[in-house]
Structure formats: C-alpha cells, structure tokens
Length: 410
Ligand code: MLT
Image (cartoon, rainbow, N blue to C red; front, side, top):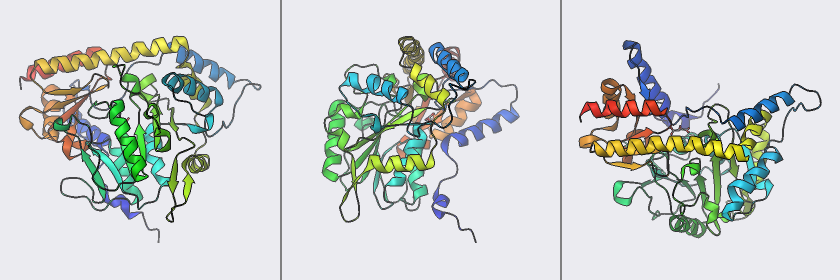
C-alpha cells in the first residue's frame, strides 16, 4: 500500500496564483469577448534584452558544433557566470565571495522551496504575514506545521504581522525560532529594509543560532541609494544567512529560468547534540544529487546581463516597469486609495476601499473593471483588506487598467 505524505493534506485549497487563474478562466468562459488586463501575478512582459538574445544565439550555435557542444554542465553553474555574479552583484557592495559559495539554479522559488529540506523538521520557522506563500507551503509539506487555524495560519509556525502600523516591517520575535524567512524588497508589500533593520535581524539570528533565508529576488528594483541590496552588506551576515537571487524579474527570465543562491562557507547549523555542520557542504551534496544544472544557453544569457550593453538595456526595462509602478501609485493615491510600496519594488500594496474583503474586491475588480489584482488575503491574514498590483504589465495596459479602476468611482 502506497502511503502518501499526509502533510500535503494540510495544505489549503490551491496555491494562490493557480486559484486566481481558475477564477479568471471561469469568468472569461462566460465573458468571451471581454479583454481582461492582468496586474496580478508578477510575470514580466518585456522581451529579453538584445544583449541577452545575442549571447543565447551564440550559445545555441555552440551547441550545433562538435568542438563547442556542451552536455551536462557543472551542477553548481558554469564558472563564466559565477565570476560575473561575484564581480558585479557583490564586490561593488564590499562583499567578497568564493566561487564555491554561489549555486546557479533554475529559480529562486525552487531554491527557497528546497533549502528547508537540509534542515531538521523540528525547527521552528518564522515568516512575515503577509508572506510569499512558497515559504509556508513548503514547510507544511515537510511537516513543520500543525493544522491550519481558522484565520488561515498554521499551528507551529511563527507569523510576524506586517501592517501599516509597523510600516510593514516585522518585529523581532519574542520566542525562540530557528529559521527566519525575510524578503526585501518585499513581495507583496513592496517594503524595503534599511541596513539598520537588517543588522537587527543578523544580530538576532546570531543570538538564537538561527539561519535567515534572505529572498532578494527584487533587489534590482531598489531606487534609493542607501538601501542595501544584499544581506551580506551587513557585518557577520555570512555567518547566519543564505541569500536568493533571480534573473526572472531583473532580466525577464521567468520563461528562460536562471537564478542563484549564495551559501557562505562560514554558515553553520547544528546536529541535535550541538555539533556544527557546514550548510554549504550539505547544500552542495543535495544540489549535485537532485539537480543537473541550468542549461548552457540560459547561463550564457544570464552572463550577458552583466555586459555593458546588457546592463544598459536591462536598466531601461527596469525603469519602464518602475514607471508603471509610479503611475499606479500616483493615480491610485489621487483616487483616494491608500498605497504602499512601488518605490523600490515592482509591487504596489493597496488598502481596499472601506475595508472590503480582499477576495470580494478581487471579484469586483475582475467583473466590473476586468482587471486582475492579487488579493492581499492570499498572502496571509494580515493581507486581508489589501490588494496587490504588479507593475510588470505593458505600460499601455497599466494606463488602461488604472483608467478602468478610476471609472469604477469607488
Ligand atoms: C508573484 O506574483 O508573487 C510572483 O510572480 C510569484 C513568483 O515569483 O513565483
């Protein structure tokens, strides 16, 4: 008799974004001619930068010739990409890394979902509320959560509310925690953390011998110069933090797939009897057992992100998305909505009018304005009464969506 992992039965209905797609499909089936605009899932809409395309074409050509053809690459990623990552993403910020500390992968979502696997199931995890659902669901699957409570939160997970009152920044927990998930710039609220804030977290993690999983997938969207892009800009962070980065949103790779995780050599975790274990070594073991590397073509594309042409072109695309974010922020503010985020992040976090339930507002926006948003409650109970708008749509669609929202007159 094949028994299933019953932890999966504790998961709530569906993953947030497929649930949104299901509702939209149902509506579209009965309204076939309606043109729906999505400001929902954060999926990019601009084509790849020409420098990336050229590099991928050359790489494809390499694959056609006997002397340049590549089979399996190194599971951890090609040196040509890792070198660029270290020299461009970290060294200018004063962070030195060894190439063995960088693991190229097919997505930050996968990395952040998988990393918990090398940690004991009796670790207590702390997450923000609202939260990117992957952090919670993967821990539920692994058995670190109890049953779901009436408010949608799981037993045995520590939730750190992020509300307008605390500027959407989590407070240090009053309890013992072992693993802390932080995401800055934040998905969904668009909040950023100052060096001061991250320093507090690094010191807390050191005191608790905890590990921070730092999701920096949106760092390229930071516009304010004093905001840190990497947790390693904080002294000692290498002793307590893993960092996740992605080319998905930065360089339009949601369909290409390439990302990386940084696991410093000095990061330690512990056995039950208190012996230290090298996390980098365990991740390397896991990565090379379960993963065969990102395609050569994708990695050549990612390498081109760091060329001088690539940098210029990608900055142009990021600026375009951020001008969408500005438009969403400004217009919704003019309409009387309370808006947050959207300055250092491609997401705008908006209070629903009159505290309307998030999913009710989602339905209203879909049916009356034919605009898709992401209901805040889908990210956790503190997201109730909010909705998230993504700035990744085409500018003309953003303009039209905002115009349609204005016409609702609510
Ligand atoms: C989002 O909309 O939150 C993201 O697109 C989800 C993801 O990156 O997996």
